[in-house]
Length: 296
Image 1 (cartoon, rainbow, N blue to C red):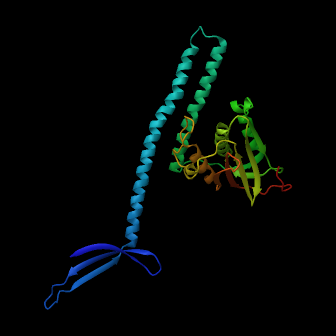
Image 2: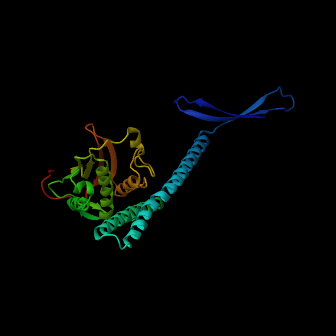
Image 3: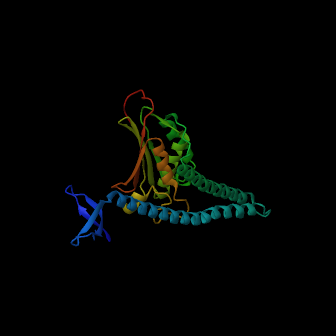
């Protein structure tokens, strides 16, 4: 008895996987015949290939998570060491009031870094478990933009004028059905990245338009842009663009994408011909707005 597998091309052009079993027939008066049993095992082969791919994906995720945990141990220690070090210096009676004020600012900054790391880890855990809570309410888009503008007014690069943040809001106040805190988290991440990558005298712009009953947001910067081979991987968990400044979890943009999709929205990124990157987010509108259909 012999068993073997082979492929044949169907007349439709599709390749099929076949299994053949050859059995020698030795009955009385038999002239040496062979019985061939042929089965179509295409679905079985496809299932096996999917299992192999799933195994490879799982192994890749395990490697990424191991690298992530190793990186996180370093990322968490860095701000913690800063907090402990400068808190210790605060106890030094020989330090001036100005020095202690500077130490306090550093401690606050390092604490924010640490909190951001922890929030990213908690958010991605909730997303993977399907437990990220989204509470949608009617929200005025212009209010979201105003809140972001106030938040970033204390950014160092904006305060010293090395980067300018511009907004282009619609003349009529569009409304979206959204979790305000989560959608502000999305734009805080995108604007932080845009400001970080912008050169001195650079401009970061966020604009809003109504297109086909959807609210379209654009965040544009004048930085170096994104390597073309990194764009397809940019929203993957743990992915960091080569040459990125130290720090961070590599989770920010994957969290952004998940939040946008929880809102039945879409996000994409592209490099601009004139330089820099453009992130585009499209979200469904809430109840129909009133007023002229114009934008600034």
